Image (cartoon, rainbow, N blue to C red; front, side, top):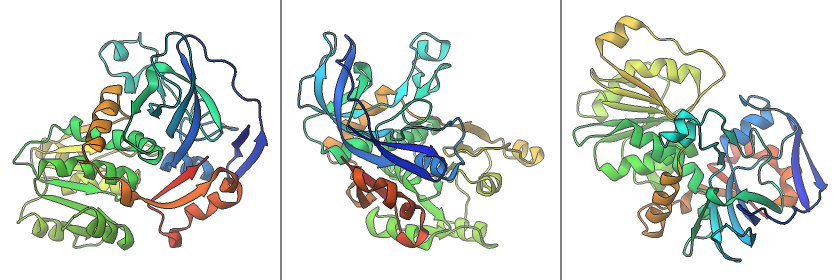
Length: 338
């Protein structure tokens, strides 16, 4: 079968590998239909992805079709599914609390173990979530949406809050989609004017700000009626942005780091204590999030159609993938069809 492997930073190869064997009792053999290209994949290509080793078959945002099932797998041939790419142990302290997203033994498809940039693969049945309504490209975006939904739930937003989302890439958009459900004041900030315009045109965001300038805090206060936000989500994974985020918070507020970078995060402790800030990270999502997101999408409450700005075929990945890193291409979300 056709398989795309990232041999080392900057080098994909296409090869012909063996098709998977018959699924085990708790496994499902799936045909890969769509693969979302994530920031994780872009960072891995650049050689900047933490927790990563080469060679690796990328691909963890997957829309798949069931081919065959093990005897304990409750699926039928032809069903379309989203794949939860987090392989959790189910027995550690985090898993026992239902926090499978931060399992002590977690392995992520396409990161720690080989993922879906191939025609077929075996997946644990517990990691599949089916839909009779959604298209493969929608199912491939459930994982991305899960990052945003999980972060918003971590923040425990209240009706009197005001929100700032830093970063308007796919993860920031995922945060935005679920933050908008609360119908409270919301601002999106990014360095890229094209992404801000995308939010205005496609996500019905009226308050967008260019980040990084000296008057940003004044502009932020103006956009929120004279006050700073009470919840800030940083979805940039940029250390400069993350270090500045504390300055943007009103007293008694919450700062949620959705993106991450390879390094140490420090802050000015007197300011941190003065504002009595709640600082939290948000990692991945859970099966509960997957089921909820599919329901939201089926009900039309979440629309990802505008996100997908670029398509590639699996055969085009080796030559075409580098173009996705070119800012001039204006990529919001790329999707690979198999």
